[in-house]
Length: 206
Length: 206
DNA sequence: TCAAAAAGTGCAACGAGTCAACTTTTTCAA
DNA sequence: TTGAAAAAGTTGACTCGTTGCACTTTTTGA
Image (tube, rainbow over the protein chains, first blue to last red):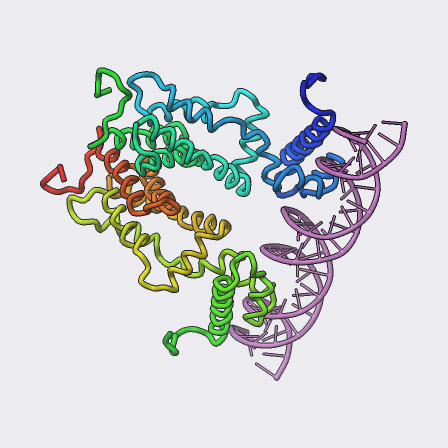
């Protein structure tokens, strides 16, 4: 975008450019013809590089699509850490997922992108794996917040289920209702016996 | 096992025999050398057939390992349907999973099999997908049992989470503790507000 | 008994991904 | 400026999983 990209060697720029060219070509071709109807060779040729060069930039075909996994993990951790007083951990996660991951795309290009991913098994699975990578970080954030020992199985379970809730919701009639049902379950269980954590406020009930 | 397998054409027998030979050879070679160090060609040659024939019997390399997916689904549904009086659905599922899927293998061959699956990403993922295939059947069983409408999101959520509990548990320090923590969460949430289902008995508390 | 259907087989091919050489291009220091 | 050393790119051949095509065998049924 800007020409003076600060402390970026002339070389890094070319590298980033070809990388971007590859990702762009891939997404364009995938949307045009469908994931399985586009070969690695097609993409490499469209970006005018060799297939081997492509694999120097991306570890596999699926990775071409998930170029910007961005900072979902940080957002998840922040959703737990910075939640408003009196809000339970699962409630905060419910809010975050409803807001950031089921927000009906205002961008039509993004909607088509999601359609592509959801309708291609290989991409669905890859996205799922990426998403689940945040499990341990989220579990640790919950444990820290609850004053539980790191590796606490209950925190690990909540983290796992909260992330899975999004997966469960997609591919169901009403995703938002599905997320709500899932988190109703988790909220109920989280503040059941032997667990008192609604954030250190005067009240204990919501 | 028995020689007089009744209405089985002479042909079906040969078919079943080669299928078994393939599965046996595959498992043996995988255990000997590791999954990635064994090629389809190796397996086909060990069973004395062509690779094309192998793919007529199995849809892919992973399927060679999961030959007998058996009737896990029926067992899950039964665990819900035939649970003892006063036992909640998640409690019954906890019992079933602890009993049937974390039972420390008495069979050493089975232990090695599980070790192979868990240490091979491709097999782990494939097994996960297979396991999750039971999600809708389990959700429907729960809905039927609870008198909830089919496609009830709460039942779908419980089914999804109950199955995921097993996945969560594996690859954690103490799998049994992890399963317990997960189901503590689910049980607590399941019998929270607006949900009264502890199986039609005189008591309502456990 | 003889075709037609079905199942099995081999060969060749395709796509994803890797490997080992070789050719740039860039960088940095003498 | 020159001239390696390093990084990036290219090429081509290769492995491996998987599929399509053509061919042979077996089974079935009239």
